[in-house]
Amino acid sequence: MTELRDLYQQVILDHNRKPRNFRVLESANRTAEGYNPLCGDQMKLYLDVEDGVIKDAAFQGKGCAISKASASLMTAAVIGKPVDEAEALFRRIHAMLTGDVTAKGATLPWHTLRAALSGAGEAVTTE
View 1 (cartoon, rainbow, N blue to C red):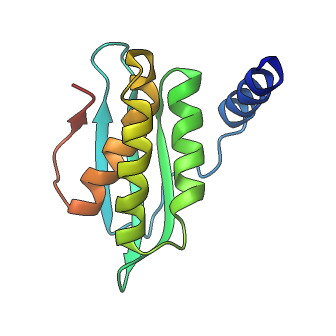
View 2: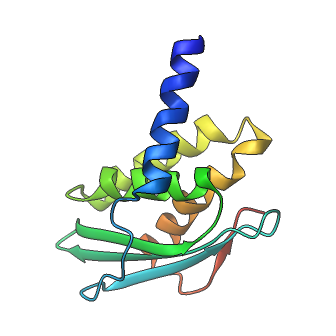
């Protein structure tokens, strides 16, 4: 179990130090903002969705290492995916993470993704 924990920590630290897709996406046609009132994490997600496919994804914001790493991993995972696959991925990740109260930082990017996909237009929270 120690090796798995070490690997998990290495992935979190790598994506926190060098987040993938951490930028403004000028071509975005869907955006959403997310906020975690428990710890102050904030993010803005940018999506370029064409013909039902996420062509590109990016984010900006501030927060803990877990939140930033989760957003980095999420954007990398959804680029090139159909919207319905991204929604299904949200449901799987959300179900996996919501059993642990400390995982709220990791769920913020995923809730923000869901808001951007739906075009909700208002900030989401982890509450």
